[in-house]
Length: 254
Image (cartoon, rainbow, N blue to C red):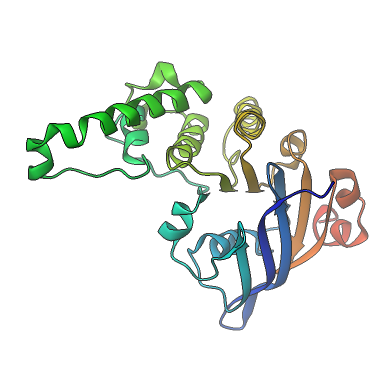
């Protein structure tokens, strides 16, 4: 039985001057799967995520999300469709609590205004729903004990989980992640990937992840797409990719 494809990239290109950062890349992300993008520094992985998520506008090719062409659309429109990107360096509102950071990311957040303050009935139920949703997200990520703590007090690994939580608050169905285990100790790195796998299993989310810590990530993923010099070299199961001659030459052999 063929797997449903949630994200399709077709012959995508992106250049910066004479540098072709993404060179005719095509790939598919099956629904409910965790795919890893691997490759040496400068291979085009992050640029590819930026093109998919709307941070960069591709020079050519297509990005299809759930059957809709999203090529070149702005990030907020792509996020509204359920495809959300997290970044290597988390940038929460440090003066707000963990719970407040989640509430800011609540999908459809109406914001504040003088008129709405006077009309409590127009926002009270929505605020209640947002808090309940945020509480569920905190529990999913095992951060409920930190809900009232300022984001500035979190460890690097906890900040990475908060990034995931903010994505979940937007009702994301597909999450593009840039080095979720970067700069955290191995124990926390395993915890982060364990949460990612748990979210896939419980909520049916799809993940496309850039990560250099292959020894940790490969325990939790479904497949790997290897890149070098802006191109896709191969894709498949970890043992298939790691034994591929071009991968060994361009990445593992360094």
